[in-house]
Image (tube, rainbow, N blue to C red; front, side):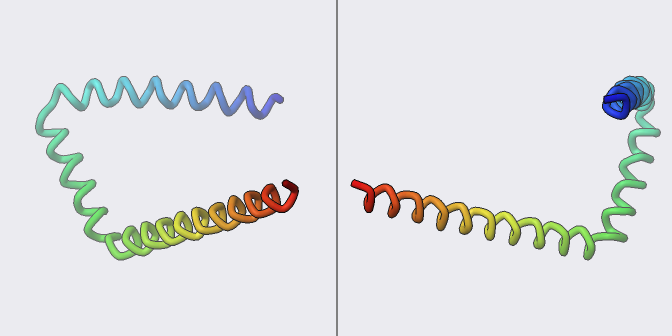
Length: 83
């Protein structure tokens, strides 16, 4: 229970600090532009990893949906057998 309280407190502090930082950033267009440039650089640098992770996630989602569909079909078939 103590770990959850500490984690919640840290999350709240992080959100508050991030909100204040973003408020200050939004008031300076040059900083917003610079942050966009840095983000663009890292997205470009790691684009292959991002694409491969996104593809893996999409494939896992498709597998999950197919598995759930099979489970649902099994449940429906069992219900029909019981009647």
